[in-house]
Length: 238
Picture 1: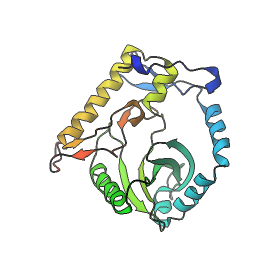
Picture 2 (picture 1 turned 180 degrees about the vertical axis):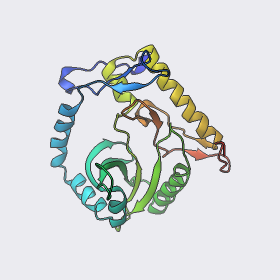
Picture 3 (picture 1 turned 90 degrees about the horizontal axis):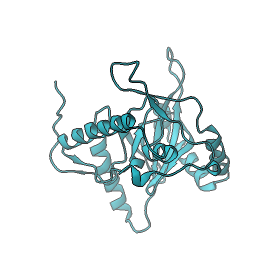
Picture 4 (picture 1 turned 60 degrees about the horizontal axis):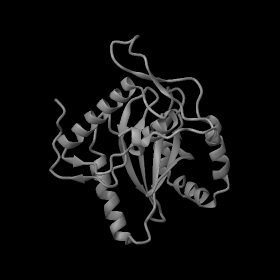
C-alpha cells in the first residue's frame, strides 16, 4: 500500500518535510523525533503566495470577528492546509496568567458546495460535529467546538498537529523504514479499533487524513464522511 504512494521529492519542490526517526535503541518503547531541519523555506514560499489571496484574507477577517472563538482558541494567523471541503488555519491562543508561551489550535473553515442546499450543509456539519466531539483517544484528533459566523460560515476548533500528515511524510521520504511504518500502522489500528468500538465508521481513511504530532503520534482526522452505526457507549475503562 505504501509503495503506491512512494513519490520522490525534487529540489524544485523546496525543502522536504521533516522526518521522523525511531530511537527504540534508547527507549523501552518505540517513539519518533523530528530530525533537525525542516520545511521552513517551503512554508515561507507558500505564505508569500497566500498574502495576495483576497479570498483567504476575507475568510481570515470573518473568522477573527468571532469573539468567543478568538477568546478561547486565539486568532487565525495562517493557512496550514486546504482540502475539498475547506481551509485549515493555525490559531494561537495567548498564554493566560501563569502560563508559558502560546497554545496552538487548528481552525477548519468549511466551504458550502454550490450543489448543496444551505439547510443540508448546516445539518451535515452539525451531525459530523456531534460524532467527532465525543471521541477521546490518543490516536484521534480532538474536536473542541463548532462555531457559526454572522455570514453563516461554519468553522471547527480542533487539536493542532504540528508534524504534518502521513502523505507528505511518505512523499518526501520515498519510503518509510520498516520499524517506522510498523509503528504508524499500529497506531492507526488502535485508532480505528476505538472508532469501531464507539460505533463510528470513518469512511475516508487515507494518508492525508492521518496527522502527526512532533513526537510521531499518529492521529485520525477529518470526519466529514463518517457515520455513526450504533448508539454511543464509551469503551474506555472507568
